[in-house]
Image (cartoon, rainbow, N blue to C red):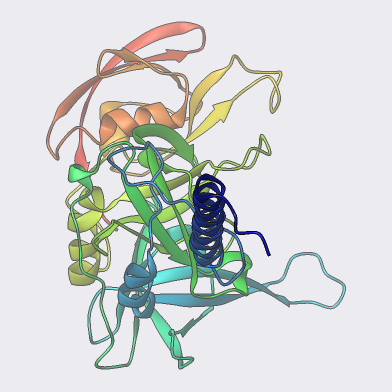
Amino acid sequence: MQEMPPKFRKNTIQNVLTVIICCVLSAVIGFVSGKYANSSSSGVTIVQQSSKSSDVEIHDVSDIAKKCGPSVVEITTESVSSGNSFYGQYISTGAGSGVIISEDGYIVTNNHVIENTNKITVKTSDGTQYDASLIGTDSQTDIAIIKVDASDLIPATFGKSSELEVGNVVVAIGNPLGELGGTVTTGIVSALEREITVENEMMTLLQIDAAINPGNSGGGLFDSNGNLVGIVNAKESSTGVEGLGFAIPIDNVIDVIDELIKNGSITSRPVLGVSLYDVTDTNNKNYENGVYIVQIVENGAADKAGLQQNDRIISFDGKEVSTAAEVKSILRSHHIGDEVEMVVSRNGKEVHVTVTLQQSSN
């Protein structure tokens, strides 16, 4: 056999080495690619960006749920009504949420959750049920205190709602639909001081975008450290828009909670001593639109000042008003003994009076 020329032999060896190197590189690249592609058990590569390089941040709230969940309870209520039923009395039921605030069974919830009820039942996160007694209510702040006969319960740790900022992560825990106790939803603080009218009361609330549904009322709103910063009390449902929930800032009602536990009612707040009614085009065409006095408490502040039933309030403390909520909002800024100037319309004439605010007799 004829021997290959040296030059041809050298070129052949180089070609073989090139092929071997290419094969090795391809194998390495394939192995590395396969390893990273299979790093997720689902076969999907998940790219997670740090908060420093992206506006999107993933929050794990499992620790908050574990810490705060045992402090939130389910509440069911029963009310006996006579109505006009052919069968006489009937029982209606309701549901809501509450937050444990002491080891011996004090629980804060919304006034509208337990208002006009005959029986209140509480269920804790471990499934234990208790009959609850009503300690006190305050319709103005929509806060109520109930109590169960228990010990060693896990109370919530109070935070400071005044330290919240728009965009902070918050966690809501409650009993949506009255059937899904312990449900955890998360979102952000959308606004800090929303003026919202709830049950004819103008309230300053936290706006959140966490999912809120009927039954969440009275549940807890917690910050990223698991501290209670609000009591969930409302959802904007009239527009059908989701992501509009509201909570009572905890700083606004700490004193209310303390006084309800101590006295069963709020006696440190000044009252006008009247019942008010808003007249609008939709509910009455015989009266001018505005806020009317429909009932006066005997020997109350309004009675002593000479106010009368059917007076329409034009201004209160120098500010024009047209709704009961506006009157009550201004009243909250005053103290017992303050003198307030009022202007009312009576029989087509303006009447000026000075009212000395009194202590509540509740």
